[in-house]
Image 1 (tube, rainbow, N blue to C red):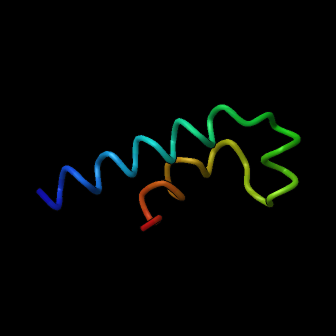
Image 2 (cartoon, one colour):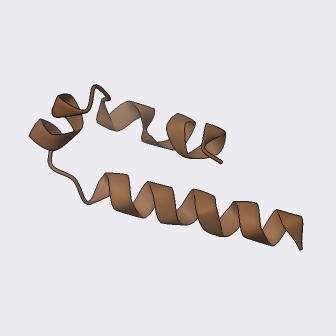
Length: 43
């Protein structure tokens, strides 16, 4: 069950960050290429 919870969190984070514009991502200090890495390390 823990795996499923982590997977859902990862997918939600990727989706939310992917929906931001490049300007919005820049404002929070990340690039589009970092989205998957950030999603993998988010809790």
